[in-house]
Image (tube, rainbow, N blue to C red; front, side):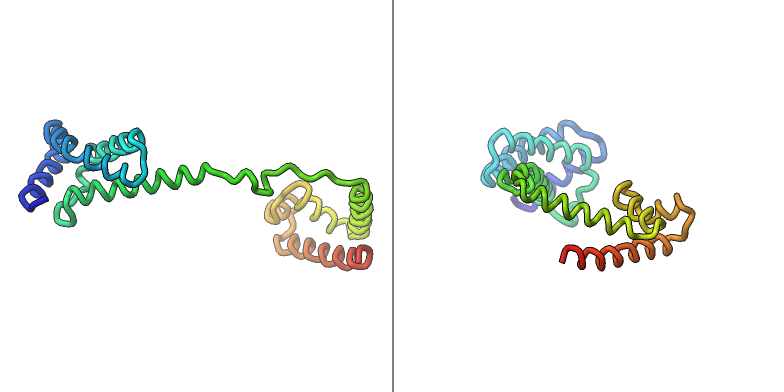
Amino acid sequence: MDAEERRRFAALAKAVADDRDQQAFSILFDYFAPRLKAWLMRRKMTSGEAEELVQEIMIVLWHKAYLYDATRSSLSTWLFRIARNRRIDLQRRADARLFDETDPALQPPADIGAEDIIVNDDRDAKIRAAVGQLPQEQRDMLRAAFFLGQSHAEIAESTGLPLGTVKSRIRLAFGKLRKVLEQELG
């Protein structure tokens, strides 16, 4: 593309920006659309995907031609940069939709054997007994935080206690539970 052609395209883009000149837009569309489509297809897009993206790029030209600055780049560079960025965004969205079916988080839980059920029940009973040994105010804080899902600030607001007191009671409860459970569970 020579300097004269660059100036011509810049003038056409200015006409689109200033006057919504449909004829200027048509000239730009006819020139750039096939080139953008070919460029996108060389980057492994299907013909349909490339055409759709070219439509988006040309809509950007129609609605945002005022953002083009001829002193910073040629119109061609500006449009191909938009095409590149849109193609990357499209690829990222496609990648985000893919998931690994073998991901352990997506697998059903393994069956629990009878021995595991007994061990878990025994462990749960020991935890309940250890929680039962805590002072009532610490039990209340643990219950609110872990069974009701309240944040420390919400607990402080609902009990009228300072936030630091709530945090201290929960921390003390954990310390006591840790000692008791280390002795009980080994």
